[in-house]
Each structure stands twice: as structure tokens, then as C-alpha cells.
Length: 218
Image (cartoon, rainbow, N blue to C red; front, side):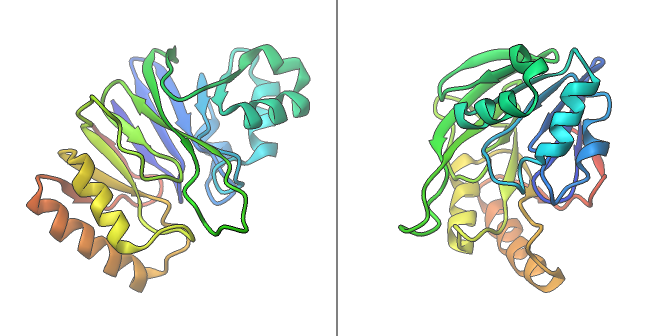
């Protein structure tokens, strides 16, 4: 499977002609990532994970494109793109389905807490082909599964570095790449990635930084 990292939280997966895009948000090159996609997975409603105009346009332009997201996101998008309503599917935690030729499992249920006065929204983590795990904005560890490729949210208003490192240790995937890095400058990125790479290696995880638009086989 080919994995292409876009800015911040967006990732594109390709396998045997199938193209799946996760979290095309406003911080990312969403239109580019969505070009030619057959399916889109959205973890939650925040704009850095969902570029609504770009996603609606993609759904309107491609009558075969399907999208999976938590119910609140799915309902919003059905309102924005009524002609595509039957191709926009709500996902609950613990679901299994196929999209663009990939096997998908869903985990979690809610976004990590930012502050008690900020409402918590639904968040679904997606495991693709028992290989690539995108947790969205959470540190939910998939149960009963050995993750092969972990996408690590490096920095967010809801996290601290110790939690990032503990998430990597908890999942213990053989390889890991960064997501949710759009709020870090080079100095901050170097510090957080240094911790993840050094400590993760002690528990069998090889961490590697991917530049925007860089691809790797996983």
C-alpha cells in the first residue's frame, strides 16, 4: 500500500487502483489529496480535519465518491451536498466495512478533551487493512489488533508530549509517521519528534518524519 502524507492530518492511501483519503482538512492540500479518490474517511468535524467546501465539491464532481464519518459530520455534509446524501455514511465505533477496496475498522467515539468549557465532539479512529491506524484527535488504542503503521498526532491543544510518547509506546507499531503537526514550527517539531523517535525505539517502534506530499510503501 502506498501512503502519501499531506500537511497536518491528511493522508492518502493507494492500493491496486483503490484510493482512500483520510481527514482532508483546511490545513492540508485537500483538493490535491482528493483527486481521483473513491472514498473519504473523516474522523471528526473540526476544520483542520474536514475542508467542507473541498469535500462537497469532490462529492458533487464525482458521483461514485463515498464518504464515511461520525453521524454529526455525515448529517452536516448531507445538508451541504443533498444530491450525494446516499453516498455519505455515518460510522459508529466498533464498525467494520469496505471502502475503495480497503477493509476498515472503527475505534474510539469521542474527541480528546481540550477544556471542560469546550464541548467534546464525536471522533472515530480508523484502522485500514489491519495496517494503518489514523486516530483522529484522540489517543484511543485499538483493542485486539496489532497495528503495523501508526499515524501519530504530534501536537494539539488537547495533548502534551508525554501523552504522545505514551500513545506510541501503547500501540507499539513497528513503524510510525507523524500527523497533526501543522501547529509546530521547526524547533517544536524537532523536540517532539526527538522524544518519539528515541523512546519509541525502546519499545520496537521505528519513527520517521514524512514531508508534505512524500510517499512511502507500508
